[in-house]
Image (cartoon, rainbow, N blue to C red):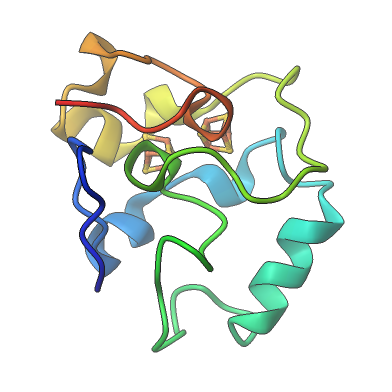
Amino acid sequence: MSQVTGSKVPFTRENVMKCLCGICPVQTESQCVEESVRKLGGSIAESPNLSPENVPGLYCSSGTANCPDIDPGKPCVCAGCGVYNGYALGCGPPVHHFCLNGGSSA
Ligand code: SF4
Ligand code: SF4
C-alpha cells in the first residue's frame, strides 16, 4: 500500500476502512466516484487493489479528489471520522474538505 509523501495520515487499508467519504454528501451523487467504486469491484472494503490513485476517499492522506463532479459546497463529514480524531486533523491545515483543500500535512 502506498505511502503518501508529506501527509500526516498513512494510506493504509485500516484507514480506508474508517473513512466516511463514501457516505459524504459531497460525493454521494458523483457518477465518477460511482464508477471508481465499480472499478474496485463494487466494494472498496473487499478490493485487493487500493491506492491513493484509485480510492475515492481518504483524501486527508491522498489529497484532492480526482473526480471533477463532486460538490464541495455540501458539508464535510470528516469530523465524525475515527481517522480525523486519531490523527488530530482538526489541528490542520486544512481542517475539512480534504477532497478540495488537499491532504492534512504534518
Ligand atoms: S478524515 Fe475525512 S478524508 Fe480522512 S479518513 Fe476521515 S472521512 Fe476520510
Ligand atoms: S474529505 Fe470531507 S468533504 Fe471530502 S468527501 Fe471526504 S468527508 Fe466529504
